[in-house]
Image (cartoon, rainbow, N blue to C red; front, side, top):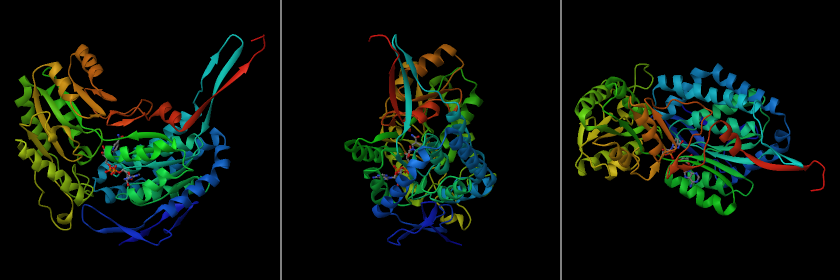
Length: 484
Ligand code: NAD
């Protein structure tokens, strides 16, 4: 059963001008889900025109009106939670249980959170002896949102909600691999009273659609989440046009486990950090650094924890590991498993495709894989694999653990496991990452700064950081009298 999925421009679905389409398939079965309209530069131009035309009315709405619409969008997604979760699981291959418990609830939470954040937002005020300054926050205008396939609606709403809250109009380009939930959300937005043209979607490929959005003169800012190489390209296109730019990029995150931990708790946390969403979360802890006295005990329990994860049909609520996002992506991940062998690694578990019954035998499944015996600075240990592959490394001193953790080009996140409070603070402060978790992983408060350093990105999202990014701060200085 396949359908046609159109672009969403000026509050309505529409094919691409060139009438071209591309196939969206379920990576767990190879089945066709939909034929998707393939946008090129002329379609992007139409979407930007619609957003530009909608801007004057939308930016003049009150904060209360915008916040109420965000809440109504949250309600609309919640009312169709199962439909959204099924669509997300079908597009990505992720377990339906994950889509139901994490992806879609977070999308709803993003709208509710930013509705509240903008209602309670405050701006700057600076008193001088004979004047006052206050900060006026203006919308940026038409903003382009470019998002990846791993957490499609979760990440798109993380940008959409604050961008709308601040009065911008939007053109979104979801990943070509996972277009369905964005379009489903556009229908909900219309029902929630979002005026036509305020939110538009162009489906298509990076080179012909994403790039046209980044280079369009009427787009004032780009918020991009995706790979580091793509981010560099987006930055190179946007910078000479002086567009405001937020880049959330790749990661190779370390889980640091000290010998004083509660072993079972740390193992459980490290397994979750390594393999959630088939290891396809930018924050996944894909290298685990373990203090030598507990290395063997940790390794044994870690392998047992990984083997206990059910790999299989994403529709089965018991499944913990679904399909990777595509056969191409699985090939990339498999090439790293081959590289790990070449670099002297031992595959402790996994490393192969699981035997599954039809139609899952056509899916992009891969067993969760654990490797040790690798040098911490080899390619497998330092490059982003973005799949269910975790490497284990022993260390002897705190300094060594920090050096290994900091020894990649990335700097997104880390987690530190120890019962020594002083060490937790000391080590956390020395890690070159934008985020550190202590004795937990991916515990999120939506107010905190989210983002990476080094090749993991530029800028921060979250709470006031997102509201700041999606607005232009203007200082108004008013003289109060006196002679200066
Ligand atoms: P990707 O870079 O291939 O694609 C991301 C988006 O950019 C897609 O919509 C794609 O079509 C578009 N794109 C591709 N080329 C473009 C171009 N030249 N101009 C404009 N747009 C272009 O990334 P992906 O494979 O979809 O996602 C996986 C990557 O995303 C991983 O590296 C992961 O770490 C990263 N990621 C980062 C975060 C974060 O918050 N830091 C979150 C999720 C994923």
